[in-house]
Image 1 (cartoon, one colour):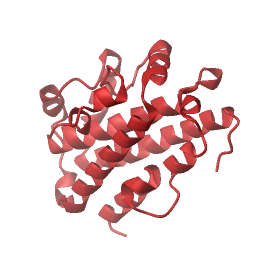
Image 2 (cartoon, rainbow, N blue to C red):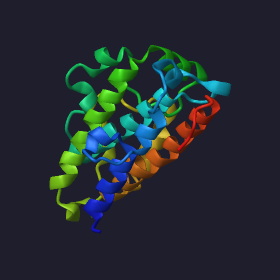
Image 3 (cartoon, helix red, strand yellow):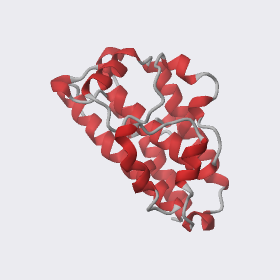
Image 4 (spheres, rainbow, N blue to C red):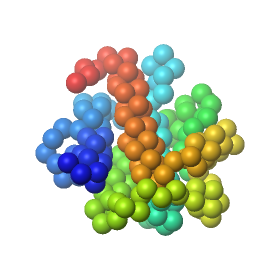
Length: 200
């Protein structure tokens, strides 16, 4: 399996099956299965909600792939996604306060969030299918790309930019897009279990 196919395999595992066109049940599908919107918004024992965690990892993917690696507008800024989502933040969520997580979880339109996530995932997959992987060993000009785009990292997330600046383009795909998503999908599975739902 080459690097392109390895990325696409992991990416499909993390996103809903509808995003990649696979028939396999993905981690996202099993995470959200049989849960009502209010359960996806819920924060049992003060945990991060599943909705907020899906937003967080999706924003990371959108910012890293589109702003940092490609230098194109984020999916969020196309087709009026903020209005569809019913939220007024575009920040990735790193450093969010407990109150901010709660407010976002209560406000976000869950169905729109799943559609936004799918749109980001499809955009990523389309680019990965054609990008020259030899160029991914080069460093990304993280600071310049972030400076040219609408703010995505809040004041409490400055360390994220410094971390990204230490990575090659391939490293940004490997950690913020894939590894970071696995970490927070695992966190979301804990939230699901605390809701009393089966975790598969």
